[in-house]
Length: 189
Ligand SMILES: Cc1cc2nc3c(=O)[nH]c(=O)nc-3n(C[C@H](O)[C@H](O)[C@H](O)COP(=O)(O)O)c2cc1C
Image 1: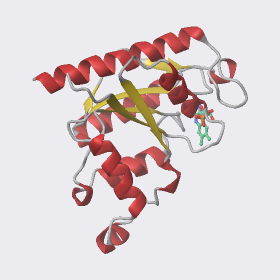
Image 2 (image 1 turned 120 degrees about the vertical axis):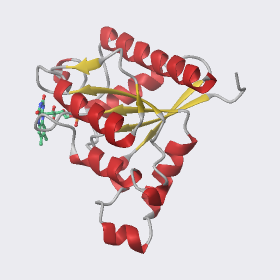
Image 3 (image 1 turned 30 degrees about the horizontal axis):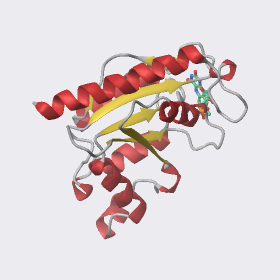
């Protein structure tokens, strides 16, 4: 095993300041095992995908995001659910880094997903769509289990989007541990 910490790049599909999903990522940072670092990358500066813009030159925020994914040992995504799917912010970011111009850094990258939503299904539909995109189109190595879906998120996060529930925190810890374990096993193959 390398002396370098295991590096996870994390991003949230919500841009809002007090987002529950961004809070889920901060909770993951608080329960990371020793020798694991989770870096949170904000997607707010990624422009809308436009093939003309891409042809003129990949925008710097996209290039920087792609570089961070490439350098990471694994990726952790927290997705909200918007209208039974994952948000356009997330799809747009994935679309940009799916392009040959940035050499599709998510391809064969170990990826874990989780999500928090206001509704009772806790992002189950959003996660299914996201899994389909990541596994089928992007060919990311998407971790199947454990599944972390947080329903009625308003009851387990405070007004600043900080997680207040130990059971959810334990499930986030289990997901991060499973991601690290799985990515290391993939590396060894
Ligand atoms: C456009 C839009 C659509 C939404 N659709 C759903 C939905 O289908 N299911 C659900 O549980 N919540 C839905 N919600 C509520 C979100 O779960 C809630 O806003 C949640 O806090 C978003 O995550 P965030 O806190 O990370 O921003 C929707 C919210 C928005 C803005």
